[in-house]
Length: 563
Ligand SMILES: [Zn+2]
Image (cartoon, rainbow, N blue to C red; front, side):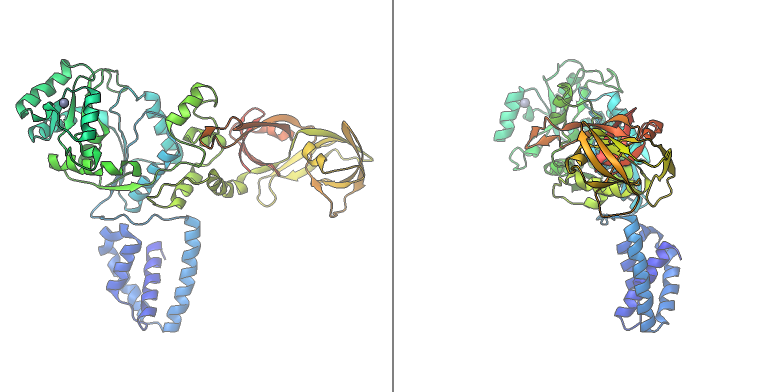
């Protein structure tokens, strides 16, 4: 039985139980569309199955219906557990669904971008629709090729696969055409007032003299923006509503002059549209059905629709979702860039940052990010979950695939007397998964952590994990201990390393505490790890027993992914 049939059967059984053993085809179908909206267009092919299943179920006794329903339900719950979380259905779905992820290539992608990209992709998949990746690149002062590349590789890492990739800057001629249409519809005017004046007038809701010019004159002024006027000398403004309570409607800027080289277009253009103008038009002409954007744009929705109205263009449905960032780990460039410039963090991939580069380097898996984003659901309320929530998801995935190794922090030497002659021992790399074995060479010297030593005194007996028991004879710079056998007893169990290699482990702590940079946000822990670490390739993941999950960053340097 395939997935859909299983769901139909479950709905039918439930419907039958609720109606004296007789399910109804129409109720089953409407319920089915509620659960699986994507099959709406496929209903003709499915209706036959529904009829067969309803007939079949209606011939059963109610007891049998109950029994089968419970069995299926249990199966369904198990599957849900496996698949994780499901987003709520989209409103106003008609024939197809087209979503888009429209980043501006003006920085490195972070967890907030991941959320937007993943949600848009999940919805496109849910309705067998399309996802467009559109670089909203109409401010040459801010955009750089390295950021386009960083966004592409970030999405690639997240396994977000757009069906179409485009740049808004490739549509400049079309956007100019729409500007002219808007001017001709008396929907825009060229304003040559000073910036402060514009600002003050907007605040007070007052029109300037430019607003009253006739359309022909405005068209001449518009042309002058391309060759005559200098930067900040003239802008094209929307003829909105200067008395609107929504200040974004008070004649916002649609185009401005920027004489800078564009990373993709070079010096081809100097009159650049704002996001407010370009986004609705791009969404509309690309047939985007559901335009999702974060809640901070909510006030701009009136403007978005007003521009499309004046141009007579189709209106996508704008849906808001909450921004995502972690508590104490801001995503804004305003908060992060100064830290990088002042070398307080090592770069955009510093493990303390919320960029995708940093999360990857720290050892967070892309599948954990997806699960995490979906686990938060589709909410409008701003979310600042603690990073530990992502860690918990990541840990669950890493646990069965990470080899266990011993690591001792701040090592102290232990000499063992009367030790039986053994040259090496063989340890399992994972207690219950088949991740192989490793041989550890032994002599009568090994290392334990100073932290463990603190809890010990002369005369104590301890078990060296996976090895044997010893009794502490003396502590003077090094520990002298005596072999006491192999019997399992209720004694402290302590980790050790034989012939260890010195490694550093970087531990990322919360970047901002009480809105101030945390000067102690990066700790470097030194210790000895098993020689085995020298056989690992960069990027390998291990779990240092009783310490945490780590990823090898470079030779003998690990980053703590999380405990
Ligand atoms: Zn003006």
